[in-house]
Length: 189
Image (cartoon, rainbow, N blue to C red; front, side):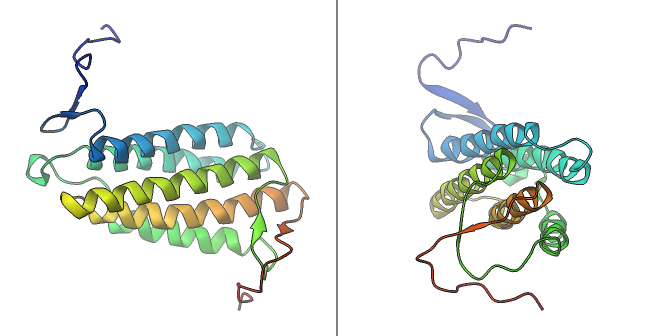
C-alpha cells in the first residue's frame, strides 16, 4: 500500500460518506482532535513508566477514544454506521477526574502551566482539547454531530487539568498559583 494517493491534490479530502474541502469545518474539528491525540502521545513520553503506570494506561485508552471522536466527527450521516463515543465513556472520565483529584492538594487560585515536563505537556493537551471542543461547537451549529463527542471533549479537558496537577504532585513539584488570581476554587469536601 502506498501512503500517498494524490486524491487530495485538488483540495478535497474523504470523510465517511463523501468528500469535502480540506478546510471544511468538519475537517478542522476532527483534525484538531487528531492534533490532540499527537500531544497526548508526546505527554506520555514525559511520564515515569513505573510511578505513572496507571496514568499511562488511562492516557492510552484516551488516545483510542480520541480516535473514536475523530471517526464520529468524520461521519457525514449517522445512518452510515453507529456512533462510537458513548455517555459511558464520559462517565468514566468523570470517575477518573475524581480519582486523580483526590491525589492532589486543594487549590484556591488559578495555576500556571508547568512545574515538570509531563505537567506542562498535559496542560498543552488541555488547551488543544479546549480548541478541539470549540471546533466541534462550530461544526454542530450547522451540521449534525454525535453530541457525546462534545461532552467527552469537555470532560477530557478537565481530566487533563487534573492529571497535569497529579504529574507535578507525583514528581514532588507544587502548583504555581497565578499571583493575581482571586480565590476561584472551592475546597474539596
